[in-house]
Length: 220
Image 1 (spheres, rainbow, N blue to C red):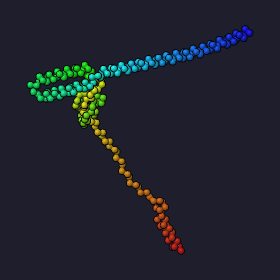
Image 2: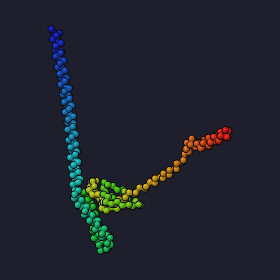
Image 3: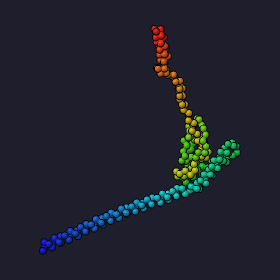
Image 4: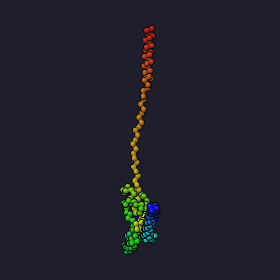
């Protein structure tokens, strides 16, 4: 009876051990799932925080974009005024030219402080569609195709982003040289082939037959 009781007790303990092992495994799986979920949540929060930070930074960088565009028209007007007055050549307006130049320099400095920079476009440069707008294309034999021959209006960027493309004139591509196609040789005249041997030999055989007939007639 004691042995049977010990076996029964042992079996009971084994069952409890198995149950405990299963519970531990289940608990471990749940803990691992919870850790993974926490890690995913943390990564998602980081991504959201990074996205918000980028959006905030973009808002800061380009908050003055519309205002900067308005100032660019002022810079254009100053450039036109300077060009017109310098062509005049009147000595009396030299002081006015100097004043306009100082105003333009102050405006450019203020724009640069806000992150606005002029697009570096000059004659001979290769056309860049990212910061330049082609307004015309002309043939220019002495220049390379797809290069700039004139700058109609200056372009500007704001913190690296193009806010106004430079308007430019581009060299047109040269027409491709027509490839000379080799002339095909003239077809040769067909050689007249002799007719069949039987037809060629027919007169000879007829002549031979006639001669034999005459010989036979003489013998008779």
